[in-house]
Image (cartoon, rainbow, N blue to C red):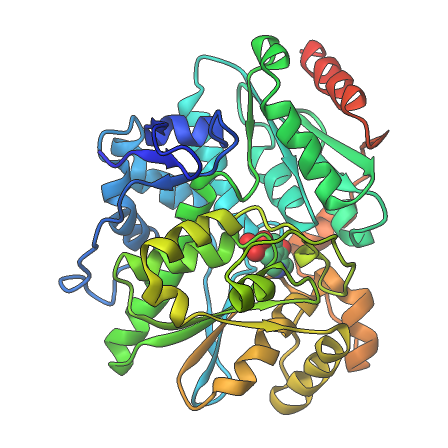
Length: 429
Ligand SMILES: *Cc1c(COP(=O)(O)O)cnc(C)c1O
């Protein structure tokens, strides 16, 4: 059985089931695997479908878990939508990760976590608390909606997510509680961390989180990077470079973990917006949190990336991985030009986050390079449509959500107010 260790206090180790239910270690640390299994892909056929591949890739982590026997069905239930790989030119490929119910890659991790959580708390009720910079919220709301024994409180920063993102988070009711906080994403995240470490509150209302700090999300996201690089290697006999638009670095961490476990990935490039914590770390080898800067790629507006410590922990264990890591910081101006140029050159429409990835990829097209397309451009139509001078038809899934009436509660950046919300929603039954 592979144990999960707090990145801060290596004496704290828990099982996978506990790591998923707790989210964060009791000392406030992030769970990291005590070791990385090496996954053999040699005997796999390239005809294997994605859920089967995912179950194979994750198997060593689930040895000894109460989820072990359900792993394949967990992957099948969670990953029940397409994963298209679109070649735009010889060396430029796009992995469209936005075909889930809420049109961003967050659906992979959130659905996997939701179904795992539902299996793990069949007997005891739980409240999931999560802070969102945009797309996590709707993915979590949609994934946990109407699962038995579970409530989900979703905190989002007022005025800092797009109208459509807000409509998507607030389209659910029943067991989903959307909370608009008068503050930034980092404020929302601080409130969540406080609730998770509040033993008094937890006695009455056991809490978990669904942020990208939850290891279940990272595990789910590893799978498609491993899968696509495996398929590409089989077909082209070459490893892929991967470019990842990043904010909280959950997605990037997943890609590094996949490479560490043997997926045929060449170089990994982290593309950020103007927020600079990652670029600063790579330059100075010293972590510093920054105040959040508001940008056009708002789901990546993070000054203190919550998965940074997982990456640093990995890079410290494996310096070669750090050496080959690249980072690009992309300005709003470059985001706009990249959306426009990508449309002109390839007739391909990208969202502002994906644009950060395209900007970074431009510099390495002498090698096969895959950009992770993190969200459907229709989620950010107010930014993208004026740039390409064209309207984007929202996919049916989005149109359905947008037609629903919004349901949410507005609070100040205040812990007492959050506690009240959680108590009221639980007492409602
Ligand atoms: C969450 C998100 C990102 C950033 O992913 P992290 O795992 O936080 O680095 C990028 N693009 C979109 C559309 C997102 O929703």
